[in-house]
Length: 73
Image (cartoon, rainbow, N blue to C red; front, side, top):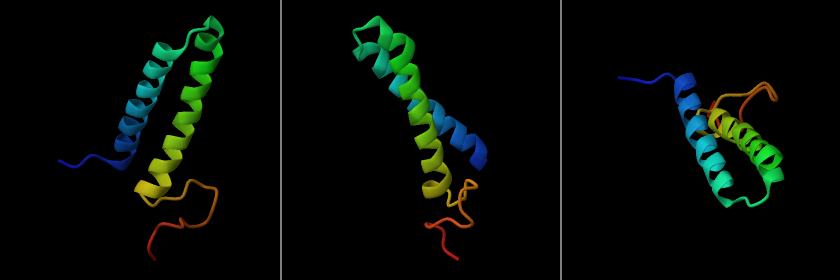
């Protein structure tokens, strides 16, 4: 059984973002952090994780360059 790349990317993103959100909600002490801090941190982690999965792990380009620097020709 082989998992498609798109599905694998979604699973990795979900696991990483949930981990960051859970740790964020456990560690914060101020109510403002619950409303702004944790969602913003989770969003940034999602963007970085998505870029990492796309370029480093799978060797795909995300539209910002013509070819991946990690992909063999």
